[in-house]
Length: 474
Image (cartoon, rainbow, N blue to C red; front, side, top):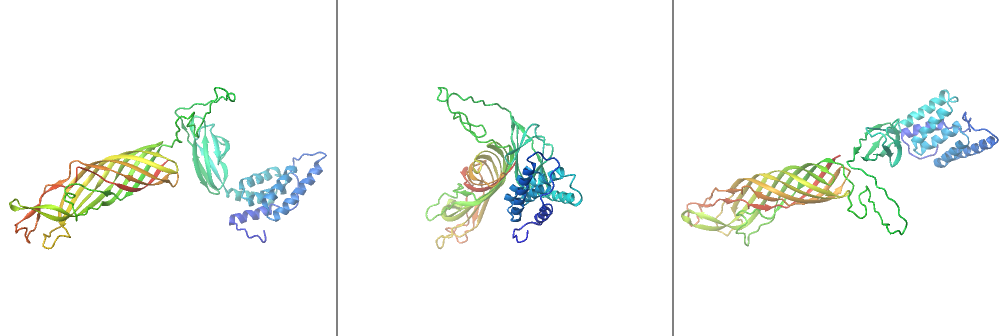
């Protein structure tokens, strides 16, 4: 329309142009089958008046009001121009499905009068409108199941033809007594046909709840409370909605912490010795299967962690049976691969809470490095670094709790804390004596050494805060 500033897509401008061509001003001829009788002239005049008011409102771009007038005119007398003008208003209101129905009605009701260019123009508009709507086809559903589209019933399956829908997001739900409901959310584009396979899963046990209403204030009257999804009656324990069985995959990135490895490194740690928390990095992948709130699976990943003890007192042995106390800096590192299994429980739909118990093995190595303490007094023995190592095999039991949010139907993000208890089998130890160059002399001894010993305690805990991302394969 001249003077309008409304933005339209090229498809919308073409639809509007075609609609205006099909909406001439004259009231136009009647449909072939119209009621006759004494009141026919009166109804015709009323229909004409509503039609003229609709034209005036259409020119003002008051599309909803104009549509009301054209529909009222059509209810009194059906005319070609009343029908096409009503369809043009529906296009402006983006009610394309209804516009298609009106144009197809015009082609049917006025087939004898529509010839040449008029019929071709209507067919062109209908073709353009088909590109502005999509269709949904339903397959695989149980015969007799009820189809709901965006919450409204669209009849029983199977359908005679695919459903026409406006482009955009739609929710398809298929229900039948004795079967688990099927639901899927679709994004349908204009001119696109989306096929949905709605296979229903038969419930193992079904029943019918019959409630007979007693007389008000009767002695047998008592409230019956039904939770959504038929989960609670008479205060019995409620259950949340059942979840669809699914495969799942999860990746966790963590920064493990350790208070102490044990072994001989922490002994002799007195002032001015310092023993800060050890730290490291861990990356673990979990895969599994979930049934309702329970899940189970396997895990694999990498763990690396180390801790330094600064300025502790260690015993240095020398030839002749002499021994000396020296201050040293010790660093212990554990690195290895994790393999295990787990079982978990989940609750919540939007806000999530998970508990998991894992068990498995860690296979790697423990390495210990020792140097003379940096803060040693002047003239004290200086050496290092001296290296010791041993293979490490641990079994672990790991309780874990996590909380987070569901970002989408299949995606969730959680923060958690896992506390694995590592049990050495066997305890990693080095029997090798590490010799120290004593050229500066320890009472002028020719040689001295640190004796071998265990590198870790037989068992010790880790504390692993982790960020996890999970994807469910429904």
